[in-house]
Image (cartoon, rainbow, N blue to C red; front, side, top):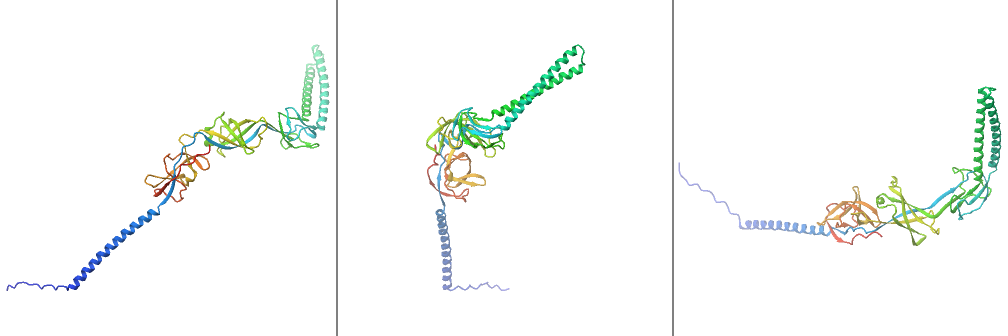
Length: 393
């Protein structure tokens, strides 16, 4: 075997022009990649700037503490101290009336007189029946005494004597019945005169001469209406949340539209001690003197109570509230400028402000007029506004 050295052919070298073109292509590819990366970075930077510029700008406020003495204003209904419709207790025709609308009367004063011919005849008949019963009773009593004397000598049987005594007792009962009927009709005769049950003023007269008068108050017509206005009662429906702050003896002020420059003191005297399940309110009664008759029963009054605030409560602008399925909420801004939704427990509504009983801290930043779509964790830009205004005191 012959030893020949192995030899390999030398690969052909590319032309210098092709190598230069490859380097240029590689450099171009690197340049394009760099340009793409730089463009992406610039685009992300611009996007962040646009997002920052589009971030929600909100005004915030802070809750404020309640005033030392707050004013609770509620509507009140004014009623007379005594108020009575006057009906007839006997039937007949109106013979005459003595007082008219607006007249001031005294207790026992005659208001009107009724002509009662039927009752007059019934009274005469009852008196005649009473006389008959008394005559029969006297005869029965004499007969019973005779039978009692004869029974001592055995001149009559004991049965006949007992019958006579029983008849006398029955006749006495008939006399008592007739006397009661006469007394009843005499009372009806007294009711011919309609009198005032108390001192007061006539607020209505609904009859005139010759009118047919029916007795009773069911379907009968009211003759007069009488009111005692020397002192007035004011009834107020107090919301359930404010009931614990009221107590008998506390003072209040009355305001009337017909007396815009005056206020009238009143005292709370009675409380119903029960909540109306239909309105969730409790009725309370206040009283005030009315010596000059300046205030009128049936009027509308504004009742102003001075109440101590609920401990721990706050006041917040009503334009911060969000009505959500979870309940009444507000949107607050945390230290990281992100939204935090809080659910509140509300008390009284003062119109521009509301009372917050729970769910909010005094240093919370609350968004004013928050958009309905505001969400938990959303980043916002904050602009401070003054604290919530105080309710009127």
